[in-house]
Structures are given as C-alpha cells and as structure tokens.
Length: 127
Image 1: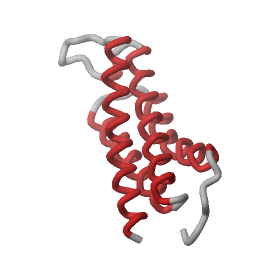
Image 2 (image 1 turned 45 degrees about the horizontal axis):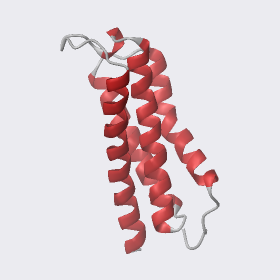
Image 3 (image 1 turned 90 degrees about the vertical axis):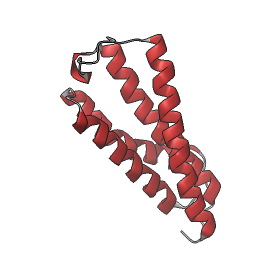
C-alpha cells in the first residue's frame, strides 16, 4: 500500500517536473511575445503547440513513472492523470485559450494514461 501511495506521489512530482522542463526548453526554441499583457490565445501557434506538447509529455512521463514504481498499479496512474488534468484545467481557465488547446488539453491526460499502460506490460498484482 505504501509503495502505491509513494509511487503516485512520485509520479505527480515527475509529471510536474517534466512539464516545467519541457515548457522552458520549448519556449527557448519557440519563443512567444515577451509582453506580459499578451494572453495565451494571442501567442504564435508554435508557442501554443509547445504548451500542449509539454502537458502531454508531463502526463505521459508521470503516469509511466507511477506505473513503473508501483509495479503496474492503475490507481496510482489514475491519480497522476487526475492531477495533471487539474493542472491543465487551471492553466487553461486562468488564461484565455483557443478552443483547440482546451479540447486537446483536457483529453491528453486521458490519452497519456492509455498509452502509458500499453508501453510496457506491467505486472498486474493486487491493483
């Protein structure tokens, strides 16, 4: 039980860490407007695409890590996916965002969870 809880917590931290690093590196390569008054919906498409890719990579890595650390516990993966869905929701609804970013941002944690459970067949013990 402790392993599953620790794996879920570690997965959340890994997901947030990958999200932050992917955003920083992506925005170095594809910078947006530096004016603080410019919202996310007014940034170039590449800037927006980096945001969405960072959300997906963060969710995928965090879910995969939680599955790996817990030996395949899908409960831990669902917790990480739920936290990432909450993070993406907070980001999207605190800023004006294009509709495509809202649609993909809300569906990507679910898709990442599906993909992470299929990358490597984990041991399915007492889930």
